[in-house]
Image (cartoon, rainbow over all chains, first blue to last red; front, top):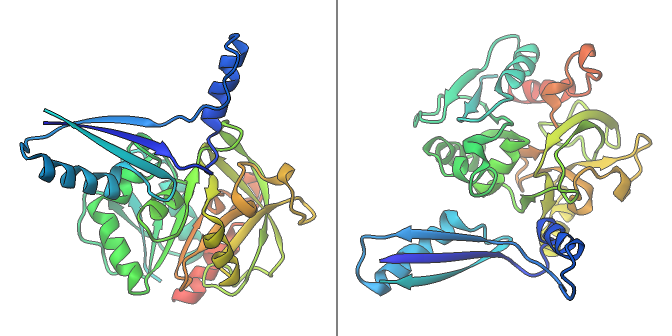
Length: 80
Length: 229
């Protein structure tokens, strides 16, 4: 089973990289970009076949290491 | 005082820290490799600057979960003194020894220069040899030094006297133009609640010889030796 984890900055946390990307998009002529927030995408290949157990396992991985919950949110997506 | 420096793959200021501690203690500190699971019996652990594990995932995150750091955290919880400088600050913050997090500099640029710091308190084992309000000249060298915590945490830090140093002008004034990285409330260094842990972005170990342009880092190391000997 594969876990797809999206890690995003919480709202209210300054994202200077996102801001720089938004600025660059404007420079390239892409109008109408209100805001850009940059995050991370992590794919994890798991032995676990049980979806509930896999979810629990990845949830702990996120809380312990993959995300810093002071500034980041995470979302887990499991695919067979 | 017995001291140890924890060395990770990618640490790069451990020799500078060794020189500063040797100067203050009159003997060399122990160097502990990150794979060691046994922490020697010491009074102080210094976590040095650098780019531990290439700053992969988030700066300090991988080192924060290494076996040796678990041991450092366990001893710190029992009162042992710990100081984290630059990447060391990021590591001990990721490890939960200090609140908040160090974000990418607001300018997105790596900042390497001398900055001025105001000593917020002399009431700690790290700052007793300074005067409260004293302005220091100490270098910074980092890409991710933008201290962030939610407003409630920042208020708590201030109320408990946990702010150790703030960025300021040569006259000791605060302002965005004197803040090299965008840190919340100009914070350059903080203590934990019990003040046996200090994390700071600037490098006091690089201000110990006149040749380096400043010797303002010396009292920090002398404070620790005095308190822990």
